Each structure stands twice: as structure tokens, then as C-alpha cells.
Image (tube, rainbow, N blue to C red):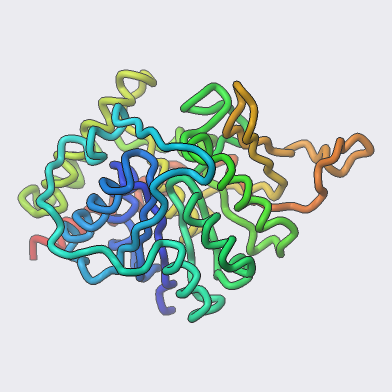
Length: 333
């Protein structure tokens, strides 16, 4: 079977970089484009990081398109404490040799979906600003895509940026709300696969697993990059969450997009709080089916999401670490 053409929408920090490398290493997908958005760090840094990581992976043939520099209706303030000042931990990659695309992120997404209807898998691992902008340009985007998956939200638990909200949804809640509503009422198989904190916080990359990936060929570009970038990210979790290893938020979203059997999905409706003083960015999820009851209180009945509430963490991590080891090994030959 031919690999599925994939566009990744990223705010390249460390776990986005891992997702990019995972995509490059996965035979099920053909990474044909990467779009960048502000989030973990500024849009200048996310774009430069993405170009540089692809060069490390030996894939400087992949188009990289710059996207939104700020959320739809507010300013952007990065949070370097998680991923480092430039977004890649302690890794200092050389400036990328090539330039970004002349197209914007939204232009790349829309044009490619129109050119190849029913073929493109879109996976967004940062704030959903680019996807919302693409939907404003092409409202039929949900039906033009083969599939769409996102990392964002917390559907049956609290957040990680505030007690209510996960980071990507919190940064641009208006974009997240626009995206969920755009998919409302579509066929179940086309609804977004939503990979949030309910599952990503259960999947961790340990120091031991990182060492095992790099040990295959420690002097290769990918291994050196991982050894410099990822420990900073692990240290953040050791300081703040009291567990060993770093949550694999973005790689898991890609993994679930490639193979949905890795997660347990529940089809439901999600609304995003955009105005609450304490709940901005909360992904309010109707897991109890209240919208179908006599006291639905104005909730639209249509479904708009397939949210992940369970994960086979061992199966995913075996696949993820195996693919990265293979990528490292290929660079040694």
C-alpha cells in the first residue's frame, strides 16, 4: 500500500521535533509538507527550528511554510521554560541552509487539499490558528482531507497550562472553537481524532529509552540532536510533574493519526471556552450525552470530535522508539 501523504502543522519545540522525526521515519506516511505556527516559541523560531530539524534528518526536500505569528484575536507570549529559549532545549543547530516556502501555511494546506482531494492526512500539534485560517479560506476542507488529527485539549481531566486548559487550546481558544465547529455534523470517520492530555500524559520518554535510541549510532546527526535537545524537556517534567520521562504529546498525536487502534476513541461534541476568566481554553466535552437530553441547554446535537480517552502506551512507545532507532541507524550507513 502506498504511504499516505501527510502535512504536519507544528510549533516546533522538542516534542514537535520528535514528531517530525517520527514522520520522516514512518513508512506509512509520506511527509510532503510542514507548516509552522507560533506556540511554544515565536513563529521565527518555530520556522527556523523546523527547517533545521528536517536538515538534521536529511529531508531538506520537504516544503516548510510559515504560518500565524499570533492567535486569532490576541497577542502571543511564548513559554520557553518548557522547551528552552529557542524551543530545542540545549541543541544549537546551525542556521538552515534553505528558505521557507513562498506560500503561507494556510495556502499550502488549502492548495494541497484541493489538488489531492481525499488523499491528505493533516496532523496539527500546535495551536490551531493555521487550521482555522485554512478553514476560513476553504470551508469544504473537512471533506477534502483524508483525515485530521490534533494534539490539544483535555477532555476528561484538567489542564496543564491552567487547571482548566491544555496549552494549545489555551493559546488560541478561538481557533480551536472554529475548528471544532467546522467539523460539526460530518461523517464519523472524518471527525478529528483529538489526542489530549487524557492520553499524552500517560506516554513518557525516559532517559533510558532516549539513551537506547542514540546508542545505535551516537555520532550521527539525529542522535546528537536528540542527546542535546530532549534532556532539557525531560528535566522540565522531573521538576514540575514528579515523574521520570517527558510526555510524548505530539508524537502520540501523529501515531494515533497513522494507527487509531493505539488509542480508545469516543465520538462526542466538544466546545471550547473562549471568554471565561478561569476557564479560557477549556475543551468542554459532552461525554455524558447531555446534548441529547431534554435539558440540553442549547448544546447543538451534532458530533464534532473523536476524543482519545485511553492509550496502549507500551505499543506506541515500542513503535516510536523503534522508528527513531531505525532513523539513527540509517544515518550510520
